[in-house]
Image (tube, rainbow over all chains, first blue to last red; front, top):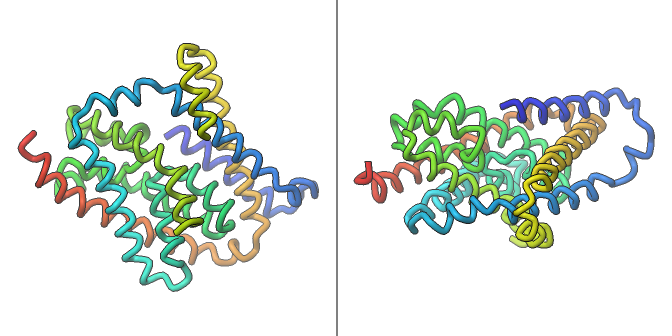
Length: 201
Length: 84
């Protein structure tokens, strides 16, 4: 939660700086967010590689657990795909990319900004932040009507950290490992799936 | 990123480096979203259309959540319910 607030804070600070137009020219002209992105990808890669415990969880649990992140991927993509019919300004591909953020708003919005521009980047940022907020608020209701996987499915990539407490509280502690697993798989998928959807599909 | 993963495999015995990498990752994310904020602030098209953009974001979220929830419901009742 604290992290989300810090991230939102930096975004808002940037927003007002941009609005005030009090910026030196070199920031507005140079494309150094590109290099910052490369750096970020490198760091995220180190983080994934170094986290032995997450590889272990994946190895030790039985095959059925794979179904959980799989159903989040398919469900999210089908859902945004279907609802994008009502959004005339957004292509199917763009809607899918936003949905493929799975709540991992920082990384997905950065990628989408870089590939498709700022408008879609902001949509991705807001949409995926909303996903986290709605999960935090509505998991008790979702679990009641959609079963114990509901919170994990809504949380998407955030099911491993920010939304884990609420999931484990309302689905039960025995679901926490599944939740972490699903979150980790989705988190690893985001940096591959989002560019894939936008550039290759 | 692949290079990063490979390096990660080799440095996993050094918790200090991992911690530093975590910190740097957070800061790289802060920096990029700060830059995105600046870009958005400078982009009049986005500022003018912010309510529309927000609404589109909300609609997409609802789609993603509805799809996930429905599939989660079936996955749960078909494969996990007996587990309790």
